[in-house]
Length: 172
Image (cartoon, rainbow, N blue to C red; front, side):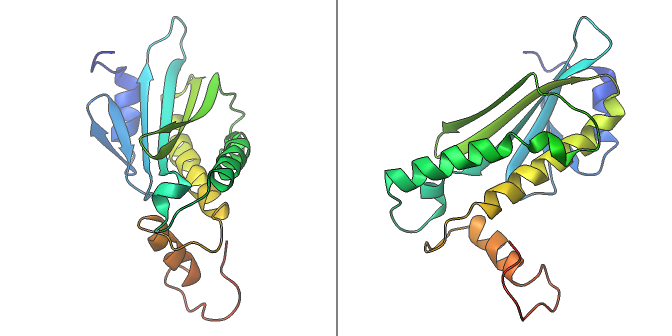
């Protein structure tokens, strides 16, 4: 891959305040997990997009040991739940490829799709990244002490993201 990106994708991502350019990638700046998107030309009018969202494996997010059965079950469930990421957007999107892989203590979700209107993709990529982060947080296994950024996200959820939510269960 070269650092040359389709002009219309560059304009769309640079025009959206939730992204910052890093080489041929556009980094999502609104989430604690690392999300990034890129685009390539196709033979058709549509561009091909890749969205990657990197989150810590359960064992990398906790202070203590996590048994392999717990981590394997968590990973399998996370993978199944992320199959519904297309529901995070208001468009009828079909992924050409979706995969969740373990890489360097991270669970990396990769979504590949084609889309004709480049202006629609930044909000779609942002929504999908936020969906992945929210799905991760919904799958937190109780009983462990979590490290940042997961502990920070849990704390924020417990406090109602700054609202006076001192009563009632944690909003997860």
